[in-house]
Length: 176
Image (cartoon, rainbow, N blue to C red; front, top):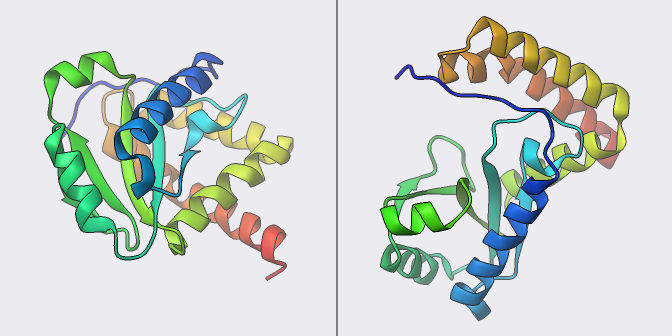
């Protein structure tokens, strides 16, 4: 599917958007969750990004069915793992809620999820490595200019860069 999308320079409002989302889900899901992580490009100061908050709701093993049911009650459709193991995606279908919350992608991960660890390691590495951050921003701008109307082609084109940054981040973090 091809459609217009946008990337923007870092916006400090994204942190406020995440806080609003976090408070909403903490209140709604209360004791069913461990914590909520702001991940993805909007979680990295000075990163260019699509203005959509990526968030991981972290849960204990065995509580997924209850979380899934609660999310369904308010209009979230479980999309499955979308090909990424240890991370379950949810899409908001409730139009009223869609307009009252900031734009976001919602994922649910167990506390020992490898994908959760990758999200956090990637985010934290770019928060502390300005050179890598600046290079990645340049690549994202270049790719956006090349694929301004094709989100999938943009994502596919930056995939190898993301994997290389993640490799460096994991090596840096775990001395692997």
